[in-house]
Each structure stands twice: as C-alpha cells, then as structure tokens.
Length: 208
Ligand SMILES: Cc1cc2nc3c(=O)[nH]c(=O)nc-3n(C[C@H](O)[C@H](O)[C@H](O)COP(=O)(O)OP(=O)(O)OC[C@H]3O[C@@H](n4cnc5c(N)ncnc54)[C@H](O)[C@@H]3O)c2cc1C
Image (cartoon, rainbow, N blue to C red; front, side, top):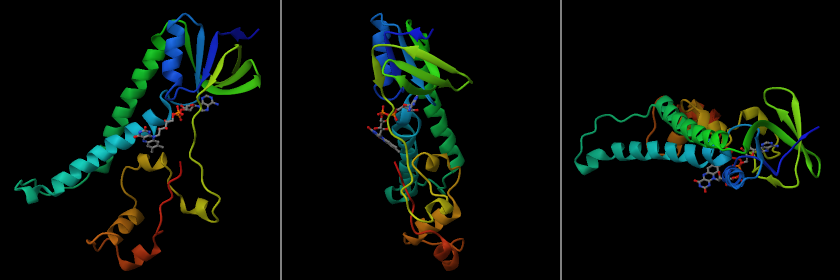
C-alpha cells in the first residue's frame, strides 16, 4: 500500500523548498523529492557559483589595475584551483543549509530520487540509494526546472563542449581557452603560438 501524503513536491528549486516547509509547518504531511542536490540550479550550478567566481574575477581585475591607483600589489595571478575550492565551499554550505532545513521540519519528508507519474495521483520514485517507492496524494507540485542541452550541431559532441555546469568545474583554464582569450586581447604569450591558436576552436558553446 503506497504511503499517502497531503502534498507531494517534485524538485527542490526556487519554490519547491520554501513551499514544502510552509505546507509542512501548516500541518500538511508533505513529501519533497529531489533527484540530485537540494536547492536546484540557482544554488548548485547557477546564481551562487557564478557570483562567487565573478567576485574572484573582480578582485583579480582590481588587483591588476592597482598600480594605476598608486597601490603596489605586486605580481597578480589567479589560482583557479583556489577559486574553484572557494566556490565549492560556498555552494556546499548553502546546499547543506537548505537540506538541513528540510530535514528538520516536522511533517516533511525529503526523499532523494527521480520522481515520475504513475497516474494522476500516484508518484513513483526511483530512489538514489536503490529501489523504488510509490506514494499517493491529491496535490502534486512540479518544480523540476530546466537542464542544459546540446543543440543538434554536427561534430559538436566531438569537441568536448562546456555547458553552464561543466565550465564551473574547471580547475584551470584549458590551453585552447587561454589561447582564445589571448587572441582576443592585446597581450599574447609564447605559450599561445599562432599554430596552437589556429588549431583551437574559435567558439565556446554555452547551453542552458
Ligand atoms: C549559470 C547560471 C547562472 C544563473 N544566475 C542567476 C542569477 O544570478 N540570478 C537569477 O535570478 N537567476 C540566475 N539563474 C537562473 C536560475 O538559476 C533559474 O532561473 C532557477 O534556478 C530556476 O529555478 P527552478 O526552481 O525553476 O528550477 P531548478 O532550480 O532547476 O530546480 C529544479 C529541481 O528539480 C529537480 N528535479 C528535476 N526533475 C526531477 C525529477 N524527475 N525528480 C526529482 N527531482 C527532479 C532538479 O534536480 C532540481 O533540483 C542562473 C542560471 C544559470 C544556469
């Protein structure tokens, strides 16, 4: 016999998380299902990580221009691994805060797995830990957001394109991106020979 809930929420994005807490606090027996990370795109691969990296870029820019303002900042370089580690720590703390809040709310059950409809009142969850669970309700809220997709472009999959999620996992800039960046700026270095720049893709695909 499937468990019955007053409400089932699929996805813990922008509205799923606060709605689940609000319903549970008002006394509804609520289940919220998440297939990956609590917080969805904004917390995990969108707003939060991009803004932490933009903050690092801004500091690098200001430090680079320090001498113009009479400040000796020395040689400025960017340690991408540290930028990435800082981004990761902030994302994880936001994600954990959201997950703790869901887990500590009475009447609320957080279930990690992929939800699908069995019929208009029954949801089946393929649990991340293995197995499946079925649950029923009269109120289902879908907050499943969107996902990056590759456009159907011949040859694209062979050039290992970066999307909005994978680009933020880089620990260092790939050689071809360095060459591309230098080719589009006034400065250049021996690292980016004309040959390697010419061999580099002249585009980055951002899908979202
Ligand atoms: C790189 C980037 C930067 C951004 N920066 C900003 C910004 O600065 N400011 C801003 O306002 N917006 C920004 N956005 C947009 C913002 O992230 C999205 O508009 C917002 O996250 C969408 O929220 P959502 O709740 O609709 O979906 P999502 O946040 O995507 O949440 C959907 C959730 O549902 C889960 N899910 C999906 N299917 C299932 C299933 N079958 N079973 C269980 N769970 C499922 C997913 O895992 C996910 O956790 C950015 C987006 C990107 C990609």
